[in-house]
Image (cartoon, rainbow, N blue to C red):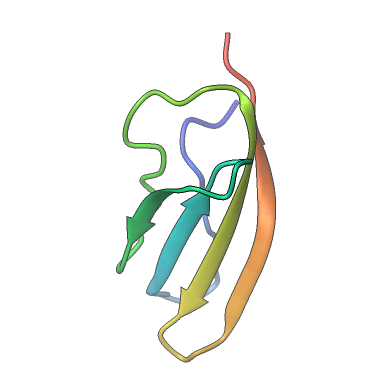
Length: 68
């Protein structure tokens, strides 16, 4: 089980991460993401992310959170 959303790379990366809930509300934003989301307790559900590298490349997707 993972405790944080980890973005892995073979090289040092820096980027902006935005997380949205299923209602489309932005619940997290960090200009220099360091694998720290979530920083507080969140509910089970599907969350959508947008990760943008400083090189202007971006990645979008979703992550499912399961809590006990």
